[in-house]
Length: 149
Image 1: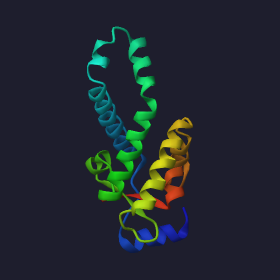
Image 2: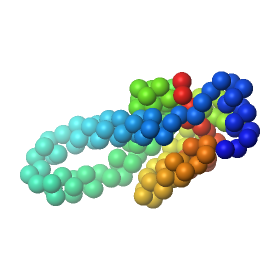
Image 3: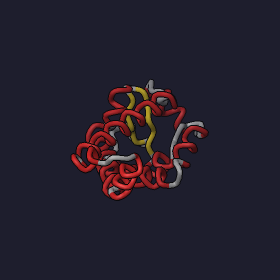
Image 4: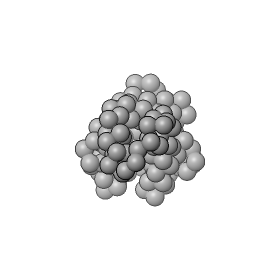
C-alpha cells in the first residue's frame, strides 16, 4: 500500500474496509436496486410468463437501470459518504486528501467509472481485491478510499 495512505490512515485512527464488508454492501445495494427496477416495471414484470420474457424485459431497460445505478451511487456517496449498503455495513467513502465525504465532482467521477467497471465484467472490482489499498478503478479515478466507520 502507498506509504502516504498508510500514514494518513494511521494518524487519523482509521482502517480500510475489509473486502467482505465491501462485497456485502455491494450485494445489499444490488438487491435494493433490483427490487426498485422490478417495482418500476410493475405489471410488465409480473405478467412475464417465462424466464426468457423476464430477461428480455430487463434487457430492454438496461440503460435506465445503469442510469439508476449511476444516480444512486453519486447521490448517496455525495450526501452521506456511503450508499445504503455501506451504511448498513458501517463503512464509508472518503477522499484520500481530506478524509472527508466526497464532493459532487468526485462522487460523479466515482459513480461513472463504477458503472463502466461493471460493464467491463467487474474488472475494476477485481482490481480492488488485489490492490493493497483495496482501491477499485472507481476509487483510484476519484482518489477515494473505503474505510470502516
